[in-house]
Length: 441
Image (cartoon, rainbow, N blue to C red; front, side, top):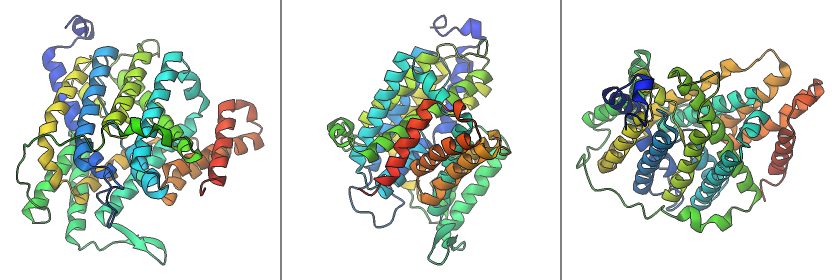
């Protein structure tokens, strides 16, 4: 096993890899509780039964998808990168696709499955580079930043810090309310832990917030910590039985959005973590195809289990910082995700006040992409600005992407830079124009 994972060549050991895997797991363990809360839409008041997904089933699907994806990445691609259902895209799945667009979760999960298959095909045929290169780097960064603002906005709403205001659309909530104060406390604690550079700061911030909530009576103490694994039956296989429902213009946009977010997020994470670990060779990523396949396969399997898109986690960098260099790090993280299946009773303490700080902090991290955009070039600033701003204001990641992809060809052509635009971008602009025209149909 040491030879397979190249321990000697990479200067690592079982001890280093185990600590790295545990560190990676703790850094991203928050997704085990945030993802079920997001996909079940448990924070939405007066939601009709059946609109959101079953929370227990999503918890199991999240843990299994993370474990399977991490195992494939670790064993097949041999990178110290763990996978799990992605933040941002799960919010798009729930708040845009289900709530705003009115698409049943069964159809949405089928779209996730198809996006994974599309990802596999592009990876197998080698077309992934062409697709990545077709999208200008400024729009990639704008999409990441826009998603960050969007999920942070959701976090502020769930916390009760931002509320509806009929006069000016949104306003400041009642900061004296107990659950809101708890969420604010959670934000402060998590910010402190993040600033101090603690690995797993987001997860530990949730733990501290939940404990304080139970001590103050704002959160009901669970009857147990360890329990039986919830049934996955409510979500398992729905992606396959509802494939026939995806053939609409709305779903075409949804599937493309699933695909692009996962595609670019994975590519960026792979390069960033591999570079940190010193695994890049000649500015190229060895076994890039295998790594992308691992992500695509995890998305496909995760959809069948019953969760939104599974992707590579930038939190894997915490494991690399702890000494992880080989795929064994991801294997260890996968083992902890499987172990987490038996801690489902803790879902009861993960209230909106507990998850809100995690959403806000992750949003802050994603908005850092704004620094990579050349705001001095107006032809670039316009589509980037519209992409970033439209996501939180329209409560839709898809709308933000659509607006940005439409304006980019316009500003670039008017600037005399039309030849720099890949034909795929012109095609996408047409698709998104049609999306707006037929959106209400």
